[in-house]
Amino acid sequence: MAESAAEAPRTSPDEPWPVRVVSQKISAWIARLGWVWVDGQIAQVSRRPGAGLVFLTLRDPSAEMSLSVTCYRDTFESCDPPLREGSRVVVHAKPEFYAGRGSLSLRADELRHVGLGELLARLERLKKVLAAEGLFAPERKRRPPFLPRTVGLVTGRASAAERDVQKNAAARWPAVRFAVRNVPVQGPTAVPQILDALAELDADPEVDVIVLARGGGSVEDLLPFSDEALCRAVFGCRTPVLSAIGHETDTPLVDFVADVRCSTPTDAGKRVVPDLAEERRVIEQHRYQLDRAVTHLLDGERRWLSAVRSRPVLARPELLLSGRRDEVDGLRDRARRVLAHRVDAAGSDLHHTVARLRSLSPLTTMQRGYAVVQRAADDAVLRDPADAAPGAALRVRLAGGELAATVRPGP
Image (tube, rainbow, N blue to C red; front, top):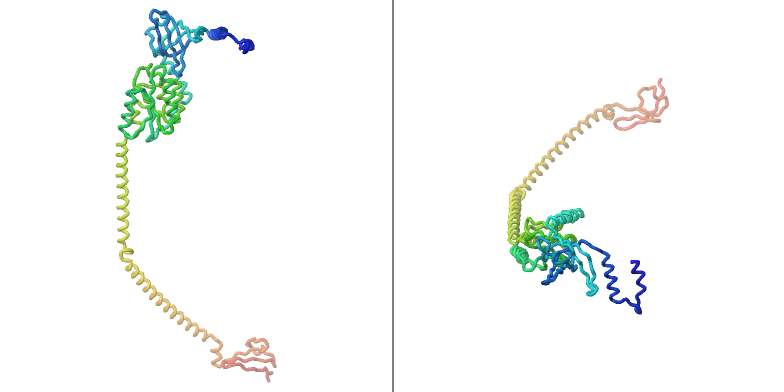
């Protein structure tokens, strides 16, 4: 960078660098990288008859990126088993810039097959990383809709997996709609195109669920569905994703990330939509149960209403009124008798009380000739002659009235 900054002022519209100088400097910068090990998938092999060089196109398994690789024929043919298009390899190479063509290429001196054991070990390490990040967590998995408006289907063109999903889904729900995206399901271009199809379906508001489907194959054939970029893309989808890759024993990493794992594409066709015949049977069963429940309820209410109507209070309400009238008449007569008895008893008691009162009354005594003498001054009753002084004025009360008297001294 320091050299570049120092040399930058040398160029100007009046003093530009020639193409050869720029090419030399680019070549020098690229040469600094040195020998490197590169992991990729062979997308194309070109061998000219009689030529000592083999030209390869090495593609990134997870992106639309590739590099040209050149190696000697002996180096290419030394691999066992022989390399072919689609093989996963590790290349020991040095990047070189060819000034004459203005192109970049890797010059390889060693090519190695990525063995099945190494692939499985890589997948196991990636599986642990994704699990630690929570991509396999059961609590984040979403339930697919009961009846999706449109089912997104990502699968190979005219494949058995596509037919199985559509055939079984249509057998269960004839009105099911599919938005199919046909992509390569193996090889170096599979992952980028699957990612594009997945993003397109996830952005479609009419698509309620997405199915990733592929038939069976070897571990190498199913490698695109264990790709880290694809797993993270499935995890980031807002639409529920069903994974239906290979057979029941096949478990690519996308199975652990998807919201629902289907054992086969046929199983996906059965699980993505409900069974119309089964739903009709369930509806008929529930309707029958509802009819029975309503009939039972109405019968119970009818029996209760009949029992209520048969009660005397409703069947012959006049009997209840007649009985109550008789009770009221009886209570009225009883009250009249009790009241008369009490009045008679009270009159008799009053008569006896009046008689006793009269027998004890001073008036009765005076009627027999007795009188009550009182001093006129203070109305005090005299009981002893000494209580009246000579000349004192007296009042004599008789049965027939009063007399005034004066006390005279005795002889």
